[in-house]
Length: 576
Image (cartoon, rainbow, N blue to C red):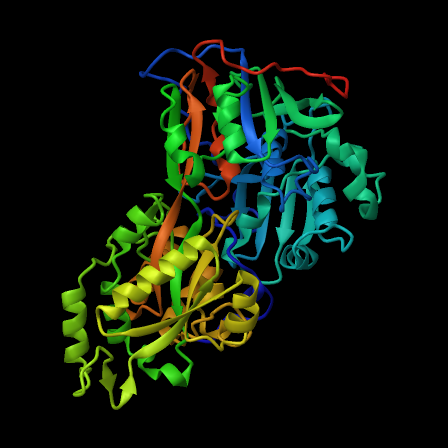
């Protein structure tokens, strides 16, 4: 089997396909409308409409424009309520209807038809049509818009056509199963932006007077002492997904998580964007604060350079397994990460559709690890000491890691655990950017402690990091050259059948666990905190912090009281 060609090999972890049949020019547009449980059904008080929910965001406003918010989490949080997208993803990483109420995929996986909702409206009352989607796609392919290079390159390669006012066709140069992941972009209204040259978009006033098609519409900026301190939104009665129960949402900006917690104590806000480790202990003392904890789309792992001949013993999977058993990860979670992580089991995140749930975390078992090394003919030198040798090669290597407090503590714990096995580890801390540029990219490292951040990538697609074609110029930093694993990843990337993709990823994970080209350590957790008077919140695994608002239309206020003022020196006239 040859590796898949060309274009999509370069793209990172991006989206998932629905399993749909095909008729009428190889398509069948099927409605995808999973039932939504009534908020509070059978549990707690019945929801009532009205009220103000106010949340503390850490950071500052930049631009309320979904094409310009990739580098600013507070903007993405606000934009999640203002804008709509063709598809959205649930907590399992499965695509759900957004503006596109249904879609179909051709048998060869290269052409998609989307049926847009006919009842979708912009916040100014204008209808949302295919023209708006195509207008946004054209912007994303424009060099003047500051988007990541891979996103721009993809949209330059995709062909698009309006079949009618509410049916869109997208054609790819080749099958690419993660493509739906790229369709979560917020759509811009053509009639608002069409007269703004793309080069002028970044500084356009429309970025602070946004018009979207999401569940909440822009009301005004909260200005205090001449500075923007927040954004006030109002429920949009014309939202195609149903009017939210909460009437108004106010976001207020704070410089730190500690300041956000103090704002809650002072009654300025009801929610806190994120409970970071530095405020966790203090936040837990707040009796009325409810905590929602889930997994983040990140993973800490140890990479081995399997192509580095200086440490050829790392090519021995028995050595890698022994090293894994020698790590006391639970101790690291409890004492270094303050309990804010789960033990990792592999390169695909738990609770997602592609996760192989028969995998179990590797136990801490140093005795078995030592026995494995002995069985693999490693011995203690006759002169004493704890350095083990095989064929006169010392079982010793350098672990490079990011030189910050957390990674330093983890690296020291790893060094300590492996010393108990007789493995000598030299630590080398460097700035993260140098770790990538000077060690990972040129493949000059021996072992590396790194974090893999897959934020905003619901599709699991492990191809970029583990396929053999990526060992030289790609992101397969371990140089793992396994043909069978690569075949699984190739096929999973080109089939639109999600059941087939799932089996392929199960096979890949089982093979990964057997070979262990890297050691998955932890999945960090995300903790969101909201006052007890806010009901209806359901938080599953997130692919971005803004995913906490997945079911925001179902939130409601149990009682009035501790909400911040909804208005403060509005700078714009509220819309309709």
